[in-house]
Length: 199
Image 1: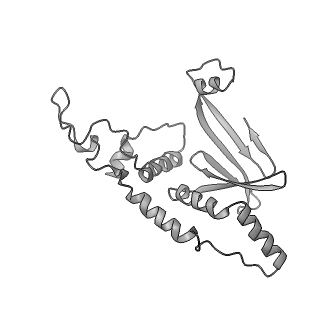
Image 2: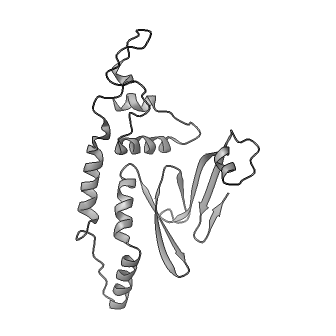
Image 3: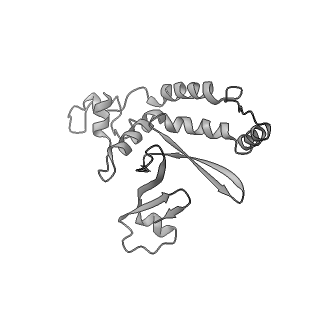
């Protein structure tokens, strides 16, 4: 049945297969996998008395009962809930104290609790920024992120590119001069080791 639902999900072929897959699995996790189906389960026939197959009807019991989310939340709580979060261990006491302070100030356990559900359907990225001497973490969903690894060190990230479509009207509402408000435009952002570049 899942393959049948996937076949009926709206799909933008400008994006890679990975984006579609992560989006579909996110819909499962959020209980929204049936939202694209327009017929209710109890509606067996159209107004023209044509039979509506079960695969084209929403279920009588919504996926919103949340069993997938419940399982995922329970798993996350076993990993990162209070009293479960990994402890900092380092032989050098000043380093250990500095790392513990960093974990506390950045609320690293909350960041990991936020990242786990995002990563449950594929992967998650945690953006680390240092601004004015302070450390900030941001959890990012990855359907629109593409990593590029260094050729001379394949285990080292060279850059990450984020790219997705934005409707011209949305851009126009934000103050940009747009020639065709009804058209879609690509938003692109790239992170290197030292820069964040917006295009």
